[in-house]
Figure: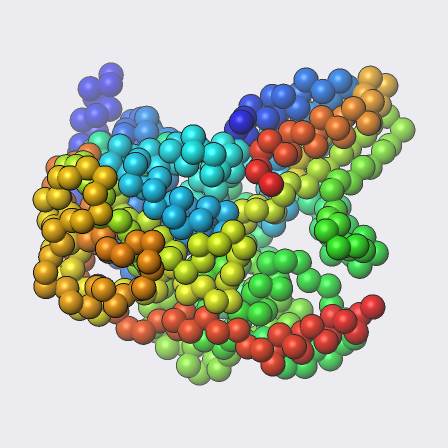
Length: 125
Length: 395
């Protein structure tokens, strides 16, 4: 089972990835990071946190069926993908893995799949 | 060069203390020391270092890994106990838990980082009046072990960010004042996060945000931040400010085991501060409402218990047996917590006692224990019903 830094190193091997980070969305701070961030680590973590919180605290995206949880958020721009993957909150961990990808080289399905695996390894479900 | 650095460090040591925790930590980091910095005062605690990097912070003001893992139901009390028994003497409880499969490495690292940042925030942002002298104990370790290390610079960045975030979160510092759920919201609906829900449900007018953190096994920072947000949103309010303004120490009970820890053979090496082993919530589900706070229960007349207990514990030499020759002068112990799995309580010890250092720290004087407000974890059923009805009204 990989630790935080190792997980982020694995994340950097996902095709098309530009940067990866683990963000605490309670505080909006990055717990760990690898590669580049869109606008520097601190602003990017804070910005991604706002998106995450907006989704989590919005009734529209709230759980609709029993056992349903918010898994990830994908934001696509013309050149980039941003994928936010929430971790299982077994601990007091309000965390998501943040992946920043180059659309030209990335495959969104693969990225999401790999990210889900990393998230599952990081925190036992 | 290294010799010189060590000499400088000793100066700080010999002069008795550093003026501030920050100063002590900076110097310890610069000299890449291994050992523990003990902070006394109203806000007390210990910072444990390896090669100048922080790997654990213990303080009564913030929940430790034992509380975070058990109160959240992540690690059952029994698993924690057994890991503690196996790994405490060697200072490897964290690694033992990971190897046992109770915890993933990622979780252990996250939890450690949370405990470090939370504790360091409390110690490093305390006003100097609240922290007394800082002394260094070379080579002393913590039972949790180095699961994740954080450099002082990174720690400083984290703390500054948290300070900024808290500073700009109204209504300011009410973190040590009891809070209570608002009776009427004056609006049609609210959306809550899980932590917000837990805080509201347990805000009974007697617990402060800091105490709620401990009760819920949440980091003090996140509980405080969310409490402030909830107060601003009008969902909880400060209860009876005239009472809360009393200068009562905001520091909750020192983290001592709530349930008997099996009296494992503890060799001469001693882990620092026995973890709080929650005997109540052994199930995987976070049964917070029914689970007594892990830190509150402590038998009366315990003031001299720890030291006595330690000697008793140290005398036991039978490996793996749970039949230590306990001090006979503690008749209240069998009544402490009827836990059939762990019938015999472990002798207690004080926070800050040395792991590898030889000299045990004498019990502190502040062990007089009053009934804590956390003693009654009964949920407020009428409140729960009201909140449920309110939420159902959202649909």
